[in-house]
Length: 411
Image (cartoon, rainbow, N blue to C red; front, side, top):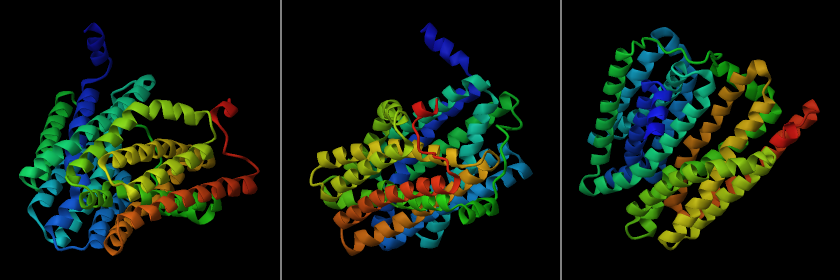
């Protein structure tokens, strides 16, 4: 009991409110958003490709939002950006619940993507503001754990709520977001936090990021690899739901379990798999991760029972853990110190795959079936490894310096 009290006292109450709030808002959003593809396919007359394009538009809007968030924060302040984004996000979920108009659904999804791109960096900056430098790594670790705890619980709750009404998960999500933003606003006022500074970073414009893509051949290979990987990864939160519903009795409930399995595996195996990856070169970790992605996709393609879907999701999640961190390591080593922000800004162009993926997935699922869809994205995952290899090779040839070395080799 004393240790728990000491841990609570170690961090600012705002940190704990954000961590606990993250559990609830991620649980709430995962009650509804992973089921959006299903919701639209079962409750509108839209074809699967159009639904995929509409969902992908949210990711595209989020990418654009990432470039304008800094400028907007400078003009009206980060606190207003964060609180405003949460209020608008609340309205977005209400909008999903009450309308079937395709244009409005598209606009709501794009607004949701913008809200995420505004809220996420500011909430992290707020955590940094009220936490000493030496404790920030632990705070961000708490936040990451909170995200996955929420995602582990949310999908199952969403599937249960949807049995009563397909709109109910969206309305519950809106209610939780509203309670969260009102509570957070009250705490900010109570502790007198009028501004949110965060760590000072360069503002990355679209032009800065685009110049990286134009002038750096090695980075272009990485961007293509990222787009291919994102096309495959995006199926998990879009077309997989419809495919499972069509393939298995009680498919909606199984899809909810799959989403929870993904989050639980991340929580349990993030540290051991990251430790394994640090002892290898980033390219090795990426290749192994992409093989895991491909095996997971192949498992989805031929799954005939719920257990095969679950095993496939575990393999898929191994790939997620291994590739996400290792890809950032390569870009970090490639970027000149004075252009690091521009390189990470340019990396967001790979989110184009999050737009293409749902559209292409919907097209393939409608024209053929889930087997063809997941075999195609499995191939994309494997081909992305070739572009990662080409990227580090191009960097070596142009600079004479390797960026593909393990952590132990750098010591």
